[in-house]
Image (tube, rainbow, N blue to C red):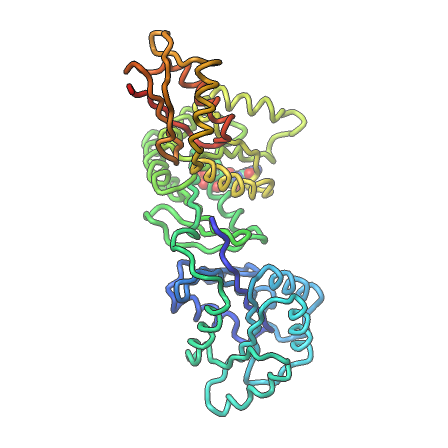
Length: 436
Ligand code: GDP
């Protein structure tokens, strides 16, 4: 995933930051919309302008709505927000004079040495344009008068923004990584998604789900986009436990199909159950990379629970997904939840890895000498060559002298060897034997 350039809108209360944010987003049919009533410091959306994608951040929540001198804390937060951006839009109110505090904020932002565009908002008429002169004393050439509300001169700002953005990238490279959050009812899936979304460090927006019962939550972290697909709504399904379980499985299947990475959530106090295993099987069969999150860590007494013993339990009971990294989390306290995103990114990358032919040849040479392939009946198979046929999941083909299939135990150990050798942590691997 490539990082999206980030444009941060800053400015005093009531200058029209969020109107400008919505104007820039709305007209370009961004993928993201803020939800009314969101109380986060910053909200973000993805925008495309002249074929360039970027992330637009509104810092409205930092500044609040009250027109009063900025506190030290607010100034610090604003500075942080601006620092995280690549371009700053400094918005001022063209209907009133620049206040000394505003001017001070502007000059402190300038020290960041990033491109700053001064946007003089609420310039609704020609006479208003005369007022622009006042802002030239900020010493900047980049001053744009517009009206976010009345859609005046938005095009000029967009042009300026586009010219500052790095050259166009292919669509798709910056798509959000889709993570299906799956697991039994009550293991804490929704809590986990909500907590991730609510984390102050993250920027979030909700999108209507692809299906009626699920919600897609878009999170932007470190300028990377993640889309969490949650199975909200299963609980509402009224019926016998068995039926609910079935409904849960169907839902998990749909979400898995629509995702790049799977996050299987287990409740640390009770696992693995039959249904945990069932869902884990779906994950393994899908061939998609997997992260296992053991939730409700806050409920176990850490001095009585040995993480290594828990790991061993998962490995033995859910042996078929033992390739997946395991993370102990608490949706309640937020402990380590962000790690899920990091791991998801890592396993996704691993699943798309392609190994160069010379390295595969070298591995095969070693294999033939040290761990000669065995067929179902236990006899030795001479493998002449081996190729990586595909990625996601990494798929290898061994060309041998016979058509017989590999001994299952051998296949398992070979997969383990490939995983260790080429770091395919977190992704299933497929192997096929063919007659050459
Ligand atoms: P879902 O059905 O998997 O989406 O589960 P929910 O997110 O609705 O959570 C089920 C219950 O577990 C709720 O009562 C949550 O408050 C609780 N819960 C979720 N995560 C945690 C956690 O990390 N710690 C604790 N103590 N409770 C949690």
